[in-house]
Image 1 (cartoon, protein in one colour):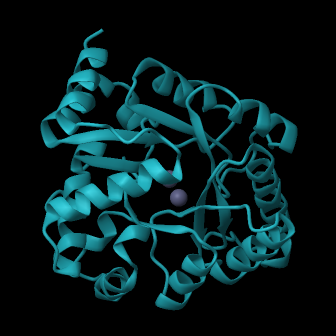
Image 2 (cartoon, rainbow, N blue to C red; image 1 turned 90 degrees about the horizontal axis):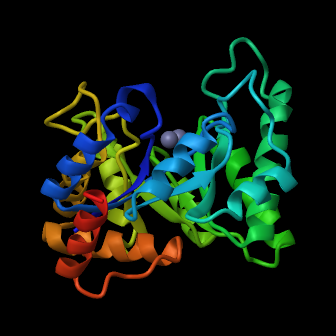
Length: 279
Ligand SMILES: [Zn+2]
Ligand SMILES: [Zn+2]
């Protein structure tokens, strides 16, 4: 059984066909999914999915690329995070990929927003879902100092990992998990496969980041959580392990990080999810 640790079911490509996606997930053995929040405006939709389906959970946060919408503060994020089925803070982090002519110094607002999320995570004792792109030095440095200030209490996952082995090492040293997406299956991603080979299995998660980044052999199509087994299969190939071992480990890692009950019996959990889905 698989878990998709990061998907955007609230996005226009997916929100209109959640029932079909859930049927595809069940057929593919994808047991659980974490629905990720990227704006305060979409929180109610994301949260509604988690409330409506007993195998969905969600996060609260504002993506670093979000501009021109409501800005989160610590109290507001904590209030959202206290609601049922909210199990993480994010996605948050730093993204200097699209500076649109600005300097890194001019992105202080993004670092301020990241700091707000880290403080909310500390206060609520929830894991962070970290997005970092072209900004790994600042992301790691800010996490390191926030974690030191929090007495080591901050944890979380670097999602859709595409960074170097050095950044992976730093994330692991911080106690964070590393999540691999469909990028792992792309022909051009040998450097990332080398990183994945080195990250201990007990620190790995898998995700789709759907609707983006559909794994091979579906590359270029709209991605959904039902395709996460392709990511698991590639991670298994890279590590020389059976896909079942990767499925079991990444599922256990997910449940541990987000403090969800480990299903006692896979078959029983499937039955419960199916019953709830048809209710
Ligand atoms: Zn992201
Ligand atoms: Zn995302």
